[in-house]
View (cartoon, rainbow, N blue to C red):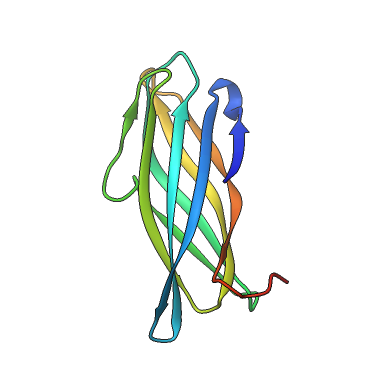
Length: 128
């Protein structure tokens, strides 16, 4: 597991990513990843959007920007956690993902929490 704590201008959010190789699909490599988000602040927060940057071993990148995660905009009370599993289909046996989540507090304060980079790697694929 790869971990990071982001102190996004007074609102601490803890994000952990856990990637897993699923197999090949046609000419692509399928990965699942589970994200764990914990609200370490004293305020209620709502996840509004996401921004992913997916980097492939051949150097190409793909951006994913959208509302919520897996069709939801979860609310997290202080000390509460939320987890979800999603997937990525990439053209190379190795890649990485990083990004950020956009949150808003009950008082209307918007902030972003960074998602630390994590590796997507199929078994036996060398890291370069």
